Length: 500
Ligand SMILES: [Zn+2]
Image (cartoon, rainbow, N blue to C red; front, top):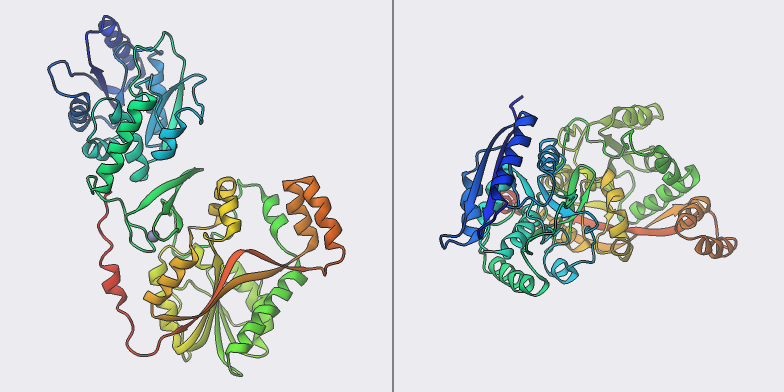
């Protein structure tokens, strides 16, 4: 393990009587921690702007953590250690110091609205950056003065760095603000214009449509959710530990409350009814004894319903699931889409329900599905839709829940575009309905509001159980285009313009 090294930058805009005390306090503190460190005064009194000097200081800093502190140090020196610990533990890339009692989301709401939600405190300069974040953010920053702070916050979001606030106890009143409500707006306009004129390096591109208009839309436990403003897809910033042989993200990790999974699992009749409904859709499209592949077999209810009428083959990446399905007499293999080898003739239909969201590369997955299909063969795909009203209404509260089990969430327009690029022709797009038990629905509604639950229970008494409901998902039926396929490689070649 390499030792932590800290580079401390002290920006100095004017004479500051406390500076010698500050330097002594920082050095005394850092010596007590055992970190390797260097402290550097960034002097702007000789005419160069603060932004320019900080940029130079930040880029020349050699530490694994770069910290900016106030010259009069209006907080205990231990705050530097806390910030370094947050970065070194890997829980965040950027830390903004915030005075106690000033972590109010409504403060500077105009600036937050026009720029990014996570802004630094204008009265505290304390900021810490991992060396990666410092290298990229300082190199791209162009603003001077207070705008520099806002720009760092904006770029941290643009390039997908995690930003966490660090509450510091103020020991004396701050000297001056780095940005105000009005001055900040000028800086925000200038930052937005710079970005619009391609003044900043492009971000890592959207994995669905390759647009570089990608932003952080939420920070969840241990990851960041990125959002593409072109195709409206959402995806995790890092697909950590995604082992190709075990991409079973459907299985919840043990430290999450297991009761959630129990609650949301519809009982057998509801599942079987949903499977019969899906089978009926298949019957309308396919001839007798057609060869059907299901990707992700779950409890095997769809397989059992289908196997009597069609030649059914299933694959599932999880070996317990595949074993259980085989025990029920189904032709199911433990394989992922990428390592499955079809030994029989090409399939007449492929059905994939809520599994595409767990695949890391949609272009590759759809190209493989296309290769498994006969020309003119049909793809039945259902996924969650980020353009659905249900998603838009619940995103703020439930984003962590959605990304507990998914890697990518697609919008319907992105999926249509993706399928057309991958050699499919869209036959129909519609809402995906599923049967759910009334008990389950009452539970969900009861958790939201008791009044709603009472009204719903009264209404449900006259409705059948299980009940057919929409869940914000869509079902797309697409056909593999016959003739020369679109060259997927040509589309993919646009991709590798990664900024980091
Ligand atoms: Zn996109």
